[in-house]
Length: 315
Image (cartoon, rainbow, N blue to C red):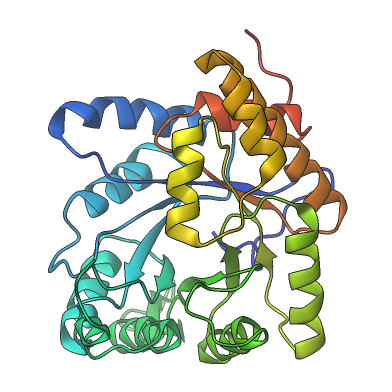
């Protein structure tokens, strides 16, 4: 479901969650339970990550199918350029479309460790992937025919369903960016290619997001820019996130996590930080929030409850 095309009532803050495919068959049942809990709260969509260079939807598609068949929530598939040819990516897109998936997150992705930029393959940018997704759907279903009652053989022809395509945005700049305005310029290119909304990489302070949105709007970006928020509940997770994103160390959060002796206490710190961040960006005008769930429902639902987005949870 596109945040742009399906606006929520003013009293409700739109929200969504990110999941990843189960790493083993034994964890599949637990993920299905998490999907049911998250879906019950009424998110706009549930996104499912996807590994680089795959030739089929695999476990990602299995999860997306489960969401589509067992919940009323829109499933959103991640796709990356990394390691893919135009032909391979087009085949993969058709596989998702044939399964009824009409929402995507188009990502450039990074080459695996030790691989050069040449590993990226034919698709050089997420803007190109956005265009390819739209083109494949247009070729696959250019129009729909609806029988006209009382007129045998007659049909009403309407344009085919369009896909919703999200893209990534980087409030503090992408690690590979060479100048300050590059990320806004890249977002403009993705918008021109057909992106319908953007989801940001995680950030730690509301001004990081709000200032980025202001710069993007001045530059001409008009699509919704949804903040991506991750509850950081351990020093190890914080370290890993910083390695992957290149974000600056949030010293106040890092110190609080380091001095807290219990895992439950660290979880409470992470929830409180993410809830405060959620409240601040919503009050600043964010069109919704997207939470990284780590395949667990309790923490992200607590964040939304403490932020006032969901009713208080019963313990």
